[in-house]
Structure formats: C-alpha cells, structure tokens
Image (tube, rainbow, N blue to C red; front, side, top):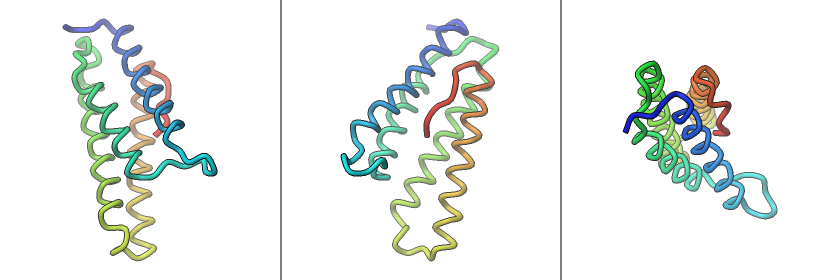
Length: 120
C-alpha cells in the first residue's frame, strides 16, 4: 500500500529510532560503542523495514537512494569487519571514512525528506 508523505516520514523516522534504541541495548555497559557486527545486523534490519515501504510518488527517488546508499554502507561495514585484520592502518581508516561518508549522505536525505536524522 502506498503511503502518504507523512506516513512515509513517520515510518522512516521510527526505523531510525528503533535502530538507535536497539544499539543502546546492545552496547557494553562499560563502553558507549556497539560491536561492528551488531551495528551491521541492526542497520540491515532497519534497512529491510524501510525497503518494503511504498513511498508517495514525490519521495520515490529519495526512497531508492536511501535503499541503495544504506545497502552500500552495510556492504562497506561488512568488508571492514571481514578484512580489518588484513588491512594496514591507512586502508582501515580509508574504509571507515567511506562508510562514514555514506552515513552523512543518508542523513542529508533523511533531513531533506523531513524524517530527521538517523544515528548511524
């Protein structure tokens, strides 16, 4: 069912808040960070929730961008997780910087559509 713009924004915002809440619950009590494998799982789950949404016509392009860019970010994070022990410091920094840039781009899209910012 196609959502109206308000419904779509609300669902995207809820997915972001849901991911943030789950991340807080998964973080170690003595740290403020979440293991990378958990971040990947959380973001993948929220991406799946967003992927199935049917946005209104005026948000279809933004929706496609969100799905594509978030998928690229998750793939980049998975690459870091899988190969970090084989990377030198410069390669690791570069890979993490690339995933951070994708997160910033996603947040620009979230703000543009009026869904606020997603903590990625």
